[in-house]
Length: 291
View 1 (cartoon, rainbow, N blue to C red):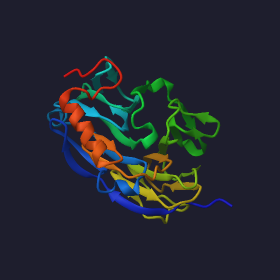
View 2 (view 1 turned 90 degrees about the vertical axis):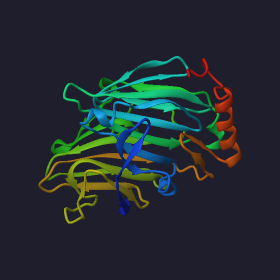
View 3 (view 1 turned 90 degrees about the horizontal axis):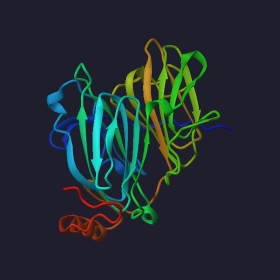
């Protein structure tokens, strides 16, 4: 018998400033991360004020984790220590596995109206994969399938599966699912998830509830809903449309030593990473530091 996952905790995103002065809303981060294993952080960087995002995220290192960037508006120009460079734009996804170490920069640019935005999720790597070779899965918008369900519900499948449709991001160690769900008013959505996995939703637009009836407390833009265990989630709408990201992954269950953009298992590994970054031996694979 199917077991519905009920909301266990609701968190409101909070304004923070990161990088060289980028104003964003943090859905969850360091203090909440133990309840989101294997995920570490989720940032919402939607903005219509160029002065709050143009300074971007200049050259900085990552090790031991993955960054997942999903764009809605504008573009982000990027470059890295492996010699890669390019842009990601509306609907595109960049899944970067930092592994043993990468140094990169991310510089946001607005559209013609000055709007820029999207989301960046950080995912942890288990000890067995902390020092793997860095890699990218960069997926343009046209390669992300859209599944249209009953009553006009649309699901963009970045990673994972909806019905017989599988998302283009594959071969990720935490076995994640990343869906962008859009629901018209007066509709109901149900989706099976893996028991024992961490599952959360982040509300992007509109208003709706995570239950099988409209009597559920409504959630709005900027809310993070963490679910109890089970094998299914449900969402309902009343008079408003509703859009949310639905994300899940297999918990790692290991100690976390985390400072800034580097996530390891022990304090000694963390100190070694920063020492190598300072002395120029941080990059283990690729062309070397671009600094």
